[in-house]
Image (cartoon, rainbow, N blue to C red):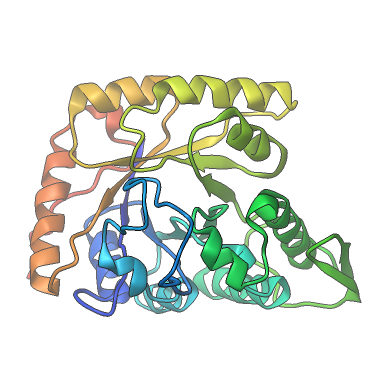
Length: 296
C-alpha cells in the first residue's frame, strides 16, 4: 500500500510546487490536484455531498489549472507521481490536452497519471459543449483519442466528440502507457467503464469503506477479460492500522490524504504529523512509508 497527498488547490495558502516538494521530501508516493475550469453561478446540478446547489468548499471556485500546477511541481521534484483527482478532460480540447500531458510526462521522466472524472457539475460541462447525458461517452472518446496521439506515429480518430485525420504529434510520453484512473461513485456503471477503458478507480469522499465496491470492480474487471488487477486509490481522513489492513486485503493499492488550505508553515507541520503517524503503522502498509522530516 502506497501513500499520497491530494491538494485541493486554490489561489490561497501553500503552492502546488511547495506542497509537492514537501510531500516528496517526506517520502510520499504521489501528489494529486483537482480541476474545475469555472463554476456557473446558476446551476441545476446538485453537488454529490450537499445534495443541492451549495458547495462544500469555496475552493471549487478558486481551483488552479491542474496541468500548470503539476508542471510547477515537476520542476522541483524528481520522484513523486504527478496526478489529478480529478481532472475533467472533456472540458479541454483533446488534441491540446494530449500535448500538455505528454509534455509533462516527457519533462518529468514518466511520472504522470491521469485521474479523470465524468463531471458531477453538468452545468459546467454544458458550457464546454458536453451534454450531461453523454459525458461518459465523451470521456471515453477523449481517452481513446489522446492514447492514439500518445502512441501512434500517425494518429487519427473518428468519434462523435473527437475527430481528426492522420496527424503527427510529439513529444510522446516517457511512459509507454499513461495510466487512467476514474474518480466516481462505486457503481457497476462506473466499473464497467473502467474495465473497458481505464486502469483503476479513485474513490469519492462519500465512500468511507470502499471494500464492498472493490469486489464489484474486480468482477467487472475479470468479466471484461482484463489481466492483473486495477489500481484502487482510496481517499482517507485519518490513518488507522485496522482500517488500512482491511482495505489492503480488499485490494486498495493507494491511500490519499488531503492537505488543509493554510499557510506553508502550517501545511508542513501537518505533513510532518501525518508522515509520523503513517511511519508508525505496522509493516503491512509500508510499501512506500513516509517519514517525518527531521531536517531544517
